[in-house]
Length: 140
Image (spheres, rainbow, N blue to C red):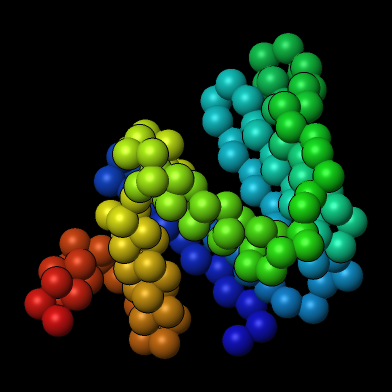
């Protein structure tokens, strides 16, 4: 597939849209989080070595750069993000410091279940309820 839009609604009522598409002149990722008080934008473009996170304050119009570094993409795997997750996990085991892990096994499982549910939704052209989907996956 060359593009996909996934809408996820959480129990809290929060909704997110994940938009993926191919065939862009700039390979990379962006994220935008809109809240009542501010918007956070992240730009991660391997081709341009850009890694930038900005905060836009809705109340006073202020724009603040929270993170602006050159991206280290010499390693493969999502702009070296995969290796950073593995290194953090190994460090937390080696040093016995659970709080240093960037992600835990439950979060990994949930993110993969969400990806599988979005694919099932695409193939069957229907909404997938995660509780039901989780229950079926646990029985496998």
